Amino acid sequence: MEGQIKTYTFNMEMSCEGCAKAAKRVLMTLGDAIKEIETNVENNTVTVQTTLPVDDVLHKLEETQKKVVLVTS
Image (cartoon, rainbow, N blue to C red):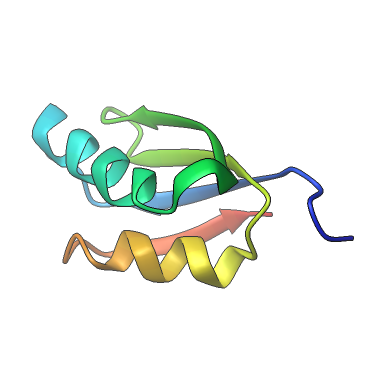
């Protein structure tokens, strides 16, 4: 269903808050489709609430040049 908000969690290599900020920065370029972003450097996770398909979010996170793997969708 178009427009439905989904939650995706990714494992992403993050060694510091700078890495977390980079993840948020690239995701925010997706605009209003991104509803919420949570990062956890300690657990290396990025959780995203969005109306976009998971592949769009994954490809955007890969722009950080960090290893990213989908955990849940």
